[in-house]
Amino acid sequence: MNKAIAVVFLAVLLCAASLSSPSSAATATLTGKMTNLQYLVGTWACQTKLPAMGSTAARTMPGAISFEVEPGNTLGYDVSSTEYSGAGFMGYLDAKKLWWSSGADNFGGVSFEVATTGTSAKTVMSGTSTQGGQSVPSRDTMTKASNSKYEDLYETQKDGKWTLGADSTCTKTSNTPS
Image (cartoon, rainbow, N blue to C red; front, side, top):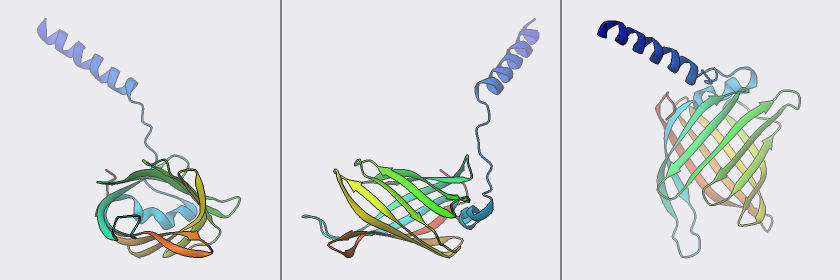
């Protein structure tokens, strides 16, 4: 009798598990123009150079970023460090021949940037970043050094001059998103 109950219990558990967690996982492989970004999928350790701001001196901060394939042939990303976190998405619109990136951070900052050109080695996205109710032109220059190293230079424009926002050099630590 106990064996029969155990078998029924196991069958109920397996059935419940299959019903309660339908697979929402996107394909692990990007297609089309997005294949240029396939190398990003995984987890990366980053060193980010930050400019002096207010009473804080310029410094370099460690952090991490994780990229994963999302529905719609896009990449999702999560950034974390001891002082900052953010998340966003990157994609390509075939009909418009347009790269796009959108993101938000734990300070309420948001950005949206686009590019009409890009290579597998370098893409410059430009658009607008808003922080504290103020919008400024922004750009991200993403340069692939290898399948396990890239740089992301983020700049904002003030008084017609591009200034450093953050310069991250990232090294891949895992092919699995965290």
